[in-house]
Length: 102
Image (cartoon, rainbow, N blue to C red):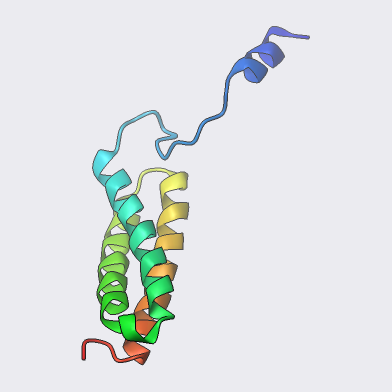
């Protein structure tokens, strides 16, 4: 075995949004909020009585996600942001269809 093969095997893979080696704390927070709000909006959008929460979470997740997408620095951030934006949009649409702000 060569030294390069040994070095790559011994290095443990770990999850990070900062694959460029720089810290992006605000972008990471925005990414996490977008994903969490999107999933919560999507789930609560399927329940008719939670339409207000789904609409609010969907709008905020969608807006923050679009801003984070414009400012994102790494591919990993962009992938998670898009998941959150799509889930937020669908949850917002379901919330609006079930009554929206009323």
